[in-house]
Length: 202
Image (cartoon, rainbow, N blue to C red):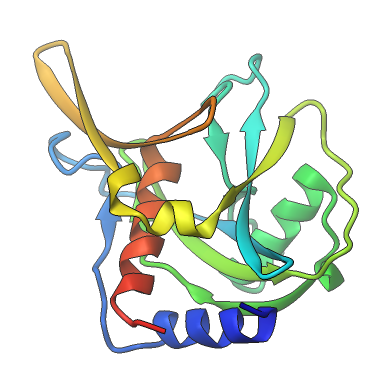
């Protein structure tokens, strides 16, 4: 499938009347934060020889928050940002050096995502033109990698796990891809993306 066909399909999916609804990091975690900090991430898509992939980052192990976890490039909204899209593009350039003009097509946004740590995240879906060059911020990002979109669309790769701590059971999504363990917020947003795409067939 060519990039233009993929873009048209995803754009149609993200702008359809179907809505999965706002999702949270943990539906059973108890009372969520009432004061939310707006944030945004980029869900970067790449087309290589007819195969669509999603670019992800692995955070460095020394970070105070979410050390070593797999994530999308992104972060909290700053006063200078004109919109969540602006936030996602700015943070992407800061974290992995991907220039704004390399992200040639903003296709839309996934459902808002609320974390138990008090962030309300807008996942922005954008297409990256190849070839491109990444300049990784070594303080925040250990490495980047790509996962095929078809792998995300396959419901057999979606897992639901739970852990009990201090008498409270927390449920979270997991996607295992090769040696990568994708869980929590990133897995939930990927699964939400898959739900949106499957709701509007090609």
